[in-house]
Structure formats: structure tokens, C-alpha cells
Image (tube, rainbow, N blue to C red):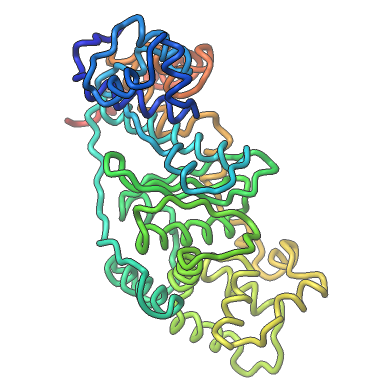
Length: 396
């Protein structure tokens, strides 16, 4: 068991408060668990009074976390769940599921990075703010500024996920949510762990690309405000309208997107499915997003997409007829999302076990897996390592 004296009373109190809030438990209820008054619990959470081991054990059990999980020096204790809870007036099970998943993923990844001595590079532009000016114009201007800052130029973006993860250093997770979940994405920022995005991997690639660009808008405009993106939201706040406009402008810059459309339709009298399919494929966006952006830029008449839908829409088989094999775009993230734990997390978990830093039981708790699953994961990677040669040893 981790040593109670290794951490300060203030740090233990902070971790207990976050664990209680993440579990959705009120101070009065927690105080009753240890047979104390509420002011005593408040003193413990503030670090004014050091918690006793018996009290810690009772509280940990009630909060659904192990004592080791609370006391491990490298453990990450973030308060993403209560932060989202305070943001939303209503809370449904699917939203809570997504927030808790994001919280668990962040905690596991950061703790594994900490124990392995991995330093994650952050390359964040300044937060812009969105309080003044026309929101659509502001979003377009700031999307163009980010593209310039990243050196992307004016053309289509090949891989927005790599830009988010590798160029900016944002934590990006693409995992499957419940089939009935309306959540398309989550964004949050925490000083300790940085910016984090979760995308619903049940959604097709084009839709996830749009969700990623939307969440990137929150990162640029209102970084410190948590956000839940849901399908078919009726009321759009200024923040949401900004993020929507930012996402469109980032993926399809007005000048280059307009020029690409004009080149495709040069000499044509009528819009065809082929025009939409080719342009959407060029910019890595959905066909609906493509048409709606053209409507927004007044390159097509309003209502064009609804008319196309009434005539059967533009289906995947139409795209295959035009693009052939190129219509089937590789979707690595969806394949990775089919695993209980991502490839990167699996490799870090194996490294922590191999170095004797974390046991199978600790990894099972951290990764929310059964111990037998952790054993299978470790055995698989061990078998691969046994087949290698000294020539393949990494330097450093």
C-alpha cells in the first residue's frame, strides 16, 4: 500500500474532494461514512486536518476507488466530471457516460506518462476570446490565423487528427459510446493535463472530422470552458455558433474552397452528385457538410441539401461509382476504438509492468479492465518482444 505520509495533507485532501465530487457524493453523506461532522470533512479536504488511515479506507471504498489509487504519487486526480456537471443544467446518462470515459482516459494516460517519465509536448496558440464582433466573421478570421500559425496554407487538410495530437499536443481520444448516445464530442481544458478532446468513434469519419474541427474551435476561442457537442442541438449559444463557424472555416477556407468549386463546375450548367462527391472527397468532409458550406458561401441556393435529400441524397454507392477504391478512406482511429484499450495505452501499460513500476492489479484498476484482460495484453506484447533481435533495440 502507498504511504499515507508521502503526500501532504493538502494534496490528500484535494484528491479526496475530487474523488467525492467525481462519485457525485455530498459532503454530508461522506461525513456520515466516517462518523464525523461536515466541518470536519471540510477540514480534511482543505488539508487543515490530516485524514487517518481508517477514515481514508472508508472514504475510498465509498467513493469507489482504491487507497492505492488515491495515494500513488504519480496518480492524476482531475475534476473533469464535476466541472461538466456544473456546466449543464440537465444531466442525462449518455452525457455522463462520455464525461466519465474522458475523465478515466485522461487519468490513465497521464499517470502512465508520469511513471514512465514521458513529457508530452504542448504547442498551444494563445486563447483568442470571442466576446466582440460578428461571431461568424470572428471565427473565420481566427481559423485562418490558426492555419497560418500551423503553416497549413489555404488548401485541404489531409489529417486533422494528427494536427490536433502531434502539431498542437492536444490529448485526443476516439472511443465508442453507447449506440443511443447523442454526444458527438467533448472538449475540456485543465492546467495540469492540458487540452483534451473525446470524439464518438461510432460516427463515420467525415462526421468525426467535423466534430474535431468544432472542438478545435473551442480550444482556440474559449479554452477554459468545458463543452459537450450533441447531435441536433436546438439552442446554440455564442460559444457554439463560434465553434461551428470555426470548424467550417478551418476545414474549408472560403477562398480556396470557393475556387475549388468553381474549377470543378467550370462549363457546367447544373450541379450534379459528382461535383459534390469530388469536392467533399478533396476536402475530407461529409457530402452534407460540403453542400451546406457551399450554401453558406452563396455558391449554391439555400435549401439545396434538403432538395438532394428529398431525391434520395448522395449515398456511399454513388461515391464508389465516382471514386472507385478511393471512396473507401482508411479509418485507423475506428479500428483502434474497437479495442478495449488503445494501442498507445497498451504499450505504455506494458512498459510500466515490465519495469516493475505497476502491477497487473494496479493496471487493471487504472485502465478499467479485468485482470485477466491485462494479463492477455501483457502476454501478447511480451511474445512480440521475444521474437525480436538486439538489432531492434531502441537507442537511449
